[in-house]
Image (cartoon, rainbow, N blue to C red; front, top):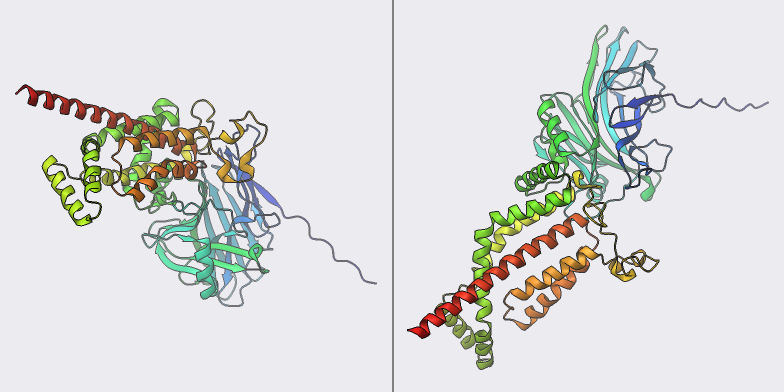
Length: 529
């Protein structure tokens, strides 16, 4: 008579607790696959779920860190995904390390000594004690595995996917690029030996990364993609580190590898602390500061310092924008003086174009003569503005990529500077009981975007009109285009843009008024003579 097999009991777990995280370690497979951040929530609601980073394989979005070995000699029994480990004590907490052990019954005892700090860093020492009569050759490894493709924000200025500093160089690969490269290379999107460094997965605000325990330790890092089962649901992404060559453990000896696993929030000061204290090369570049790193990070540090003084990140943005405008005041003055003089010449330029409309070369030469006689350089207003563009972009990036602005309130209806302004013109700012944005993003037109559009329109009106009619029409539409384009951007960025425009309008209006007064004074003095 056939009998059914005895079902396997559920996997044992040990709790993981720190002031910043809570979760558990799965003793079946030695996986850290349950981790939430106790100081971050999904939304502003007090009872909102805590942000989850790691999740087990039997859930909808498996994501975990794991330690293991591969049998390089083809005969040593090594622990696998279904191996049940024995834990010494628990929970895993600061000052309370835990050691996992497993005996393969052939003379080798495998151990994983785990400890965790007060923040997000797990330290692991993988050991093989060989009590057998023959040497054992094994390859220890640590990995972060993501068995689903996460939703990404899709912004050009934000990298999400594989990231790491390997061989002293930042190596970023998007999910789509990794998939294409791995298809050509049997699953390996990138592989590189590195002394020190780190590698992992980055989301906008969160990071899971592995690294050697020592800055002078050399390991081989890999970015991998495979597809199990076909279709997008079968995508499997992995970052792993292992020694460059297998370790041979002689009888009576112990082979080991020490690594770290970071699973946490990308807080700038925290990453800086790990970078200096643990010697983790360029760990702050887990935050996508980009090409303008040398500007973006100092800007953030200044913003954060002002925030700590004022207690309001929105106020910090306003104050810092004033400081930036003050630093560029001489350059901006030069640009606005040139614009004011160009605007004063606009009637004469129009007259020249009308007079020589059938002779463009003559019109061009007459315009150049006019510039020369009035001592106006049409390009002088552009250069100072071009110099300022990297600065403004760097500030924009600093606000966009750092977690410190997340869930920070401003005043009034802005309760989260990192989220879009929730108001909407198309439902009369909440008077009508529906949300048009559910049908299309173009039907989201918040109050701060309108304020920004108005300030941009006013600023444009103060500038001299482009000489080309087509350019003039394009420029006339720019405030409307930008208002719709930026409507769904984080409120903090829109407030910065509107405030920067307002300061520019005030400065430009003052200079134009001063120039008109000076021109009237010169004219009066000329008549008096």
